[in-house]
Image (cartoon, rainbow, N blue to C red; front, top):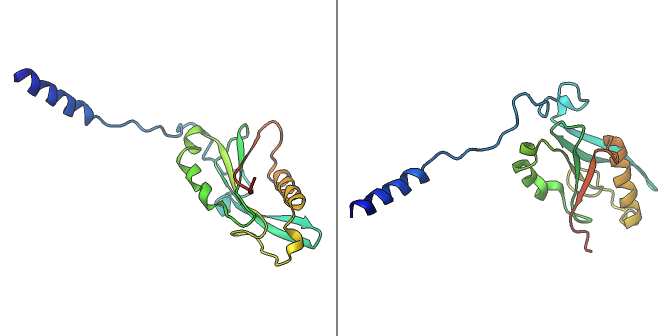
Amino acid sequence: MRIFTSAVFAICFTSCAPVQVETVDQDSTYLDYSLLADKNSGGARLIPINTPLGEFNVWTKRVGNNPATKVLLLHGGPGATHEYFEAADSYFPNAEVEYYYYDQLGSGNSDNPEDPSLWETERFVEEVEQVRIALGLDATNFILLGHSWGG
């Protein structure tokens, strides 16, 4: 009986050990926004997009600062928003991944023109390209993480 009691105590005691949570290295520049153009807006930025019907603005928000690894989060749609990607806040910062929320034209915080001629796949592809260029994303540092689009 004494061995059983000791074993139960040992299991209970070790299961109460503190859990170690990974955090961003304090010496890292990941959270240093001081030299970035969007430092006073919390990373949010409207990007002008040229379309066949003129110029409209799409909303983006940068989180983190890592010139080597940048992810553009492309929500489903057309019509969804960036909001379901907010789970990225739980894992990208610990990996020091810079990432961008983005609401496509007609969605969320972006302009919402009411002309159905704009809702064409080719136009959306061109929009993503304009956003990529405006954010300074290129083949050396850029990952596109997309979801849905009905395919």
